[in-house]
Each structure stands twice: as structure tokens, then as C-alpha cells.
Length: 337
Image 1 (spheres, rainbow, N blue to C red):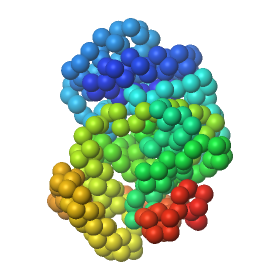
Image 2 (image 1 turned 30 degrees about the vertical axis):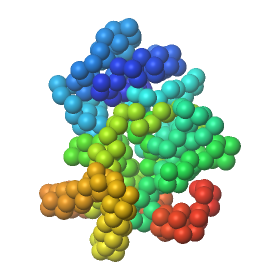
Image 3 (image 1 turned 135 degrees about the horizontal axis):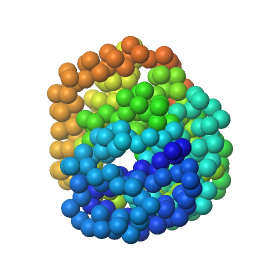
Image 4 (image 1 turned 45 degrees about the vertical axis):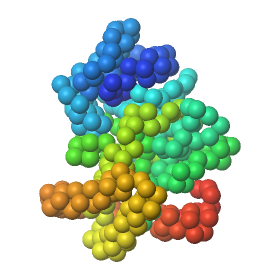
């Protein structure tokens, strides 16, 4: 098979009922197959799938989370390209072809994402990916079309296909051989930041990531993980683990000194606002990162030893926080790479 669309599901009965029909309708081709990978759901997800005999099911014995769930599933799939698609994404006609054609034209492009608009208001970009992802020098992610929590209106301003630092896990199209060569997702992440970490490792191997805005999808966002403090914890912890694995040695001391200051500043701000669960999440993330850092020593050594290109041009060389809060930058176009 040339293309496999793979949807990871955990207790997403309502989401499958709402969004799977568009995937089945607009992915109909003899070169395309659709899989649902079920993370041991306890709702009626499997009953919903009985309505779609053309959809193949991979039933996992427990909830492996996003990272391990996909890793295990992709071991059972034989395709040239896989599209990892969130269960809360609505696709439209011709959504697959532009991304596949982009990867076909250049073997150095390992993965790409479409333009991702908000399902709730499709005039605007969606938070998780927008029109391609980047990180700043301290590891903070942002997007072409989304700085901090502010999403831009889509006026066609980002309709050119460009290299990006990361492609969104909401709709992540990747050559399966590159996914496997890079070792797949880091399963200890469980969820959040795993696609950014994978994209960083791909670039260290000399590969590129692109946004392909000729393909358009709509994403609900925040539908598959509702516990905000849990999400905050995973984002902080996994971001630090990602930096530790992938940063060149010459940048480590400066970056981690600044992150120590910024992370505890964030925790203090949560305390001032009375958000105790969020403050605890940041503190626990820092604590668990320190504990996990030792076991990541061998992983870091392996990544750095095999890196072919450590000068990645898609990392923003300044602080995105300063750009937003001090210099009042409002859009991606205001940034100078």
C-alpha cells in the first residue's frame, strides 16, 4: 500500500462518529487505506467502527498513549507513507494528494503537514500546528499563524510551502522508512512534544520538514486531553527532555540556565494567580526531568553521535517570549530569522 491514514483513538466514540465519515469519504482510493488504532477504549468506539468495514482496526491491549500507541501500530503497517491523524480532524476533498506529491518530489523531505484551520472558526488558524511549527533558541514552540495563544486569521498570507522546524501531530504525513530510521516517537513522552522531538532528530540526520498549505484540514484541538494541569506537566517535562537529547553541547549550559529561570518564573506566576495545580505541574515537571536526565544520558550520546547536521536553520535565533511580551510582536511575519 502506498498511503496509510492512521487514527489513534482512546474513548473517542463521539469524535469518531463526527469526523471518521469525512476521512473515509475523502481518502477513497486503491492506494490509500484507513486504520483506527484503539488504545483499549472502554466506551463504544469499537461499535462505531463496525459501521465502517473498509476501516481496518488495530486493537491495543492497554492505553499506550500517543507515542507508544503509534510506534506499536506502525510496526504492523506496510506502506510507503503514513498520515498520523488526530481523531478530531475534519478533512476535505484532495487533502492527501498535495502532501504525498511534495514528499515524492524530494527524498530529503521526510515529513510535512497541511494548513490546519480551526474547526470552530475556519477563518482562523488552529493552535496546534497552524501553517507549520518552529521553536526558539530556548525550546519554546510557536507556529506560522500562531504566536503564544493568539492565532491569526487566514488571509492566504502563508500559502507558500516552506521548510519548518516541526510538523503538527494533528496531521503528520511522514515517509515510513524515515520514521523507522529515526527510531519513531520517544515512548517515555507518553503524549505532547513527541512530534517536535522526532522532527528535531530527523533534521539532525539531514532531513527536512515542510508545511504544505495546498492541503487543508480543520482541527477541533484540545479534544483528546482535557486535564490542563496534566497537559502542562507533560509539555514542560517533555520539552526539557527534548532539549537535553538534541541540543549541541556548546548550547546546553546557556539554554538550561535560562530555562531554569523561566520555568520557575512561570511557576511563580501560577502561584500569584492562585492556580495551584498548574504551579505544582511545573514544579513536578522540573523534578521529574532531573530524575529522568540520568537515564537519558545514553540516548543523548546516541543522538549526538549520529547527528549529521547540528546547524539547523529553522530554529528561531531569539527569544519568542521577548518578541511577544516585550516587543509586542503579533504575527509570524513580524519575526526576523
